[in-house]
Length: 157
Image 1 (cartoon, rainbow, N blue to C red):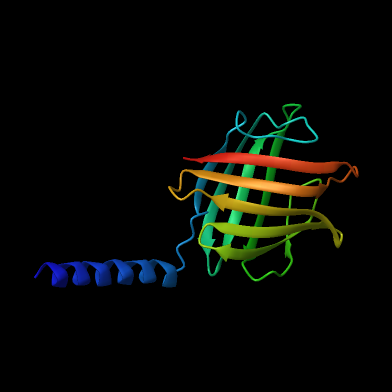
Image 2 (cartoon, rainbow, N blue to C red; image 1 turned 120 degrees about the vertical axis):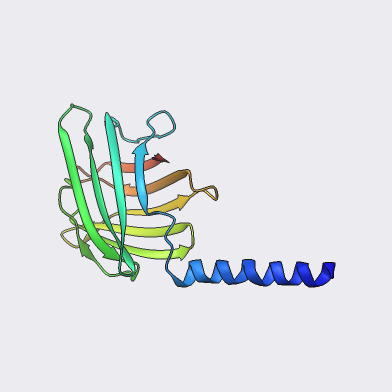
């Protein structure tokens, strides 16, 4: 009896996990607030604030980011993209105007940003297993030609 209950429970849990995968559950979806204390911007300066909202859309996401840059001016950036590695238009960024996304696993996405076709940044975004933290690690160049090596941490809201 005990073995049968264990087997039944295991089958149910596996079915639930497969359902979540099949339904396209995306750990990035939600609202994320920039955690400046845990983030590292090189080169600086860091922005004063930022909130990112990620919405599920077909097999991809709609990404909207609002905040305040280091000088206190408002910022707004957005794009819609699928996880297919194809370039998608980005509006509002001074450093890039397209992005491609590729899903690595349930919690990891790789992206490449470009400005007028030239690769600017390669990035990896990882959502923690508990789903509370999202870390974006980017390397490359900004629009001024400076080396970029950022680790940007967000907390789920």
